[in-house]
Image (cartoon, rainbow, N blue to C red; front, side):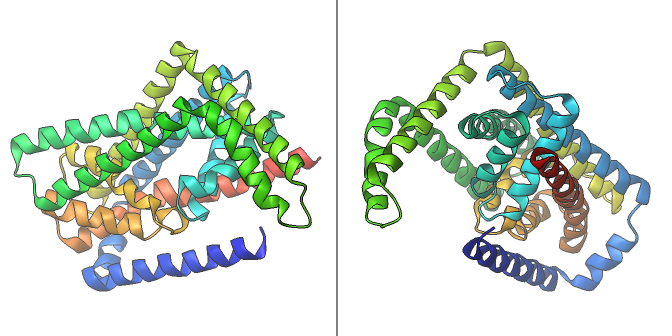
Amino acid sequence: MDGSQRRGLIIGGIAALAVLAVLFVVVGADRVIETLLSADPALVAATFGFALCWLVAWSLMLRTVLGSLDVPLSVATAFLVYSGAVFANNVTPFGQAGGEPVAAALISRVSGSRYETGLVGIASVDVLNVVPSISIVLLGVGYYATTAAVGERLEVAVAVAVALIAAIVTAIALGWRYRSAVVDRLPSAVGRLAGRLDRFDADTVAAGIATRLRNFFDDIERVGTSPGRLAAAVGLSLSGWLFQAAALTVAFAAVGHQVSPVIPLFAVPLAYVAGATPLPGGLGGIEAAFVALLVPTTGVSASAVTAAVLVFRGGVYWMPVAIGGVSASVLGVRTVR
């Protein structure tokens, strides 16, 4: 990690702590802490168990996608690699956008594959996760609307999520549609910019980028020609979302509140839109988004909702950070040896 990256991480971490501090002040820190201290330990453990099931499901999803790229990984290695990828996402700004390059390098080192192949693998997992997420959001909100009035806040959240996902899908589609133009023009443009620096040769830089882009698009095409693996990956993605929704439902039970499982079903994907903020893994922003969504939809007090969210985030954020940090270190040492 160079100086600029370290400064970015420190600034992002301070910003995340500031957002969390404001959230605690607004909802009442003393009430949140009191609720957390009275939480049912067995149900807290169950929350972490469901979170672990999510991590396993999406690690198997990564293994399935990499299998279509002829990159074999054992189940255990896939779990460690994906945990390391989640760790990278959770400690870098802008969520997946910040952590994917690190995750791709980890996959490449462990499997011996090209860096572009690792990037396609982890990026494919993120893209495929969009399909079931938007589906369960629309289904969940639709069912919720049959039992309660949909508030303006929820309407705005759904609209923003759909618009953001539509923009991402459109950008991906355009990039794929005009991939030949991208390969032909982007390397030379970057090469010219690099050539202005004395340390780089423009032609060498352009040739290297062109090769990587061609490999990248070739690997994407290979993923798309495995319909069986794609279907399995989408099924594992859906399982992961359901495990997260179950974890949030149990987290509410742990702090003494029963909520309809339908609400976490659409709240979990919607709140993760806040992960696009320049905070490490969306830390602070995602918690605030959860509270903003869950207070009006559950009717539970803000302090109890915050406590439930903190229990949930302990399982889906801090546990993967701990597991992923260790696994990334172990895999890195093994690779060096």
